[in-house]
Length: 273
Length: 211
Image 1 (cartoon, helix red, strand yellow):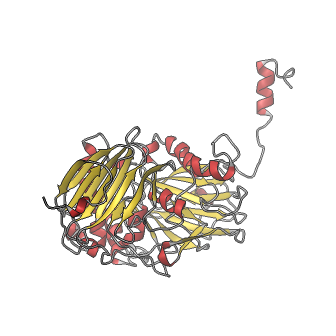
Image 2: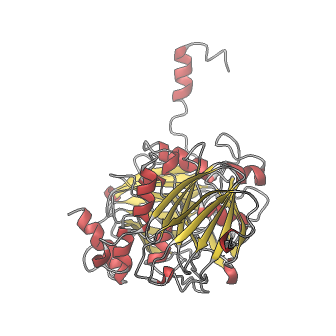
Image 3: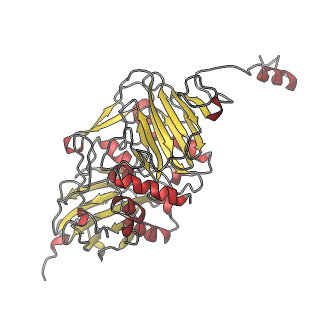
């Protein structure tokens, strides 16, 4: 191999010969999705990417965008950070998200609230039902203890280090990586506060549909849930598809579902006034 | 000389001892091995609490790492308060209150507008205290993360319902925190008046550090 790549032109030809290769975990550019919902034009598609098992991805999404996440094989864990794209000091506040909505469990109609009293994203559809607002993600210490290693460069990357890379690509730093939510993997709270992880494996193809209520930066890490009891590093690819959509209107049922949520939308609408 | 009951059981000499007034912030550096005792002087006072590693304040308290590590939402005697990098920062060495909260977060002017209405926007809030204290040392809004609420009660019911309910603390009850590394403690003595986190009546607390 080294012999035939001894010249720059040979190296160039070798590199260029890879073009067009298709693997499971990759972005599709320009985005193509043959399973868009009825009424969504292909020209509205913003993003099509399959996030590797143990991988991460990040995306800036415009206000009104829909983001569909699909747990392709039943063992994805979508750990998510959210920032106001124009002012990333504003970000997802998990404590406010559960406290303001008086409930710990995410599902259809729930809002993901910022620390500035605004709604970053809302959950339009939930085909999973097992989500987690409490456990956060793995870190180098937990992965080293469980799998022997957790380095980004190794076979068992941890969620926090994936977040650091994703956030850094928007100019953000260690102090910007904040508490996250986990979609597709759940945490049931028992009497006395005990946490029972709900990690499946689940049926393949479960999906969640989110709507960006602000201009957001989303970082998603797809690493095993930190309380996954299985010995092996168990995680499968996650598919992300996003398309342009209308900004939430005044008659939207999710906007008007609760007085707390309505005020969060009023605060967003005021921010963009 | 009368004996101060709030000092009972502390193993070393007292190196710091202040009363934090109702609604006020407090910031203090505590060395590894020292113990911080928080005294709920009048009862049912939420003490909102953040923690940073003195050597590198980008490492800080993580509610999620703490509850994951112990598999339980409530902070009790023996709970290790963990950083966002999974390291022990402080340990709850003793507490006369059964458990403490770390899921309810801190009140802010902004979240108050959601919870109670826009008429509460001008009320003082814990995030204001966290910012005021942290700004003195160069930390800002990016450094505010999910916190601990000592003496506060946030049960989670079968269907996931949760909320701040009447406290389980009482006058003179305490929590003792042993520092496992050099830390910076930032406290907001919660000024909230719209929920039972402090009995609708913010009161003072006492902070005692023993070597």
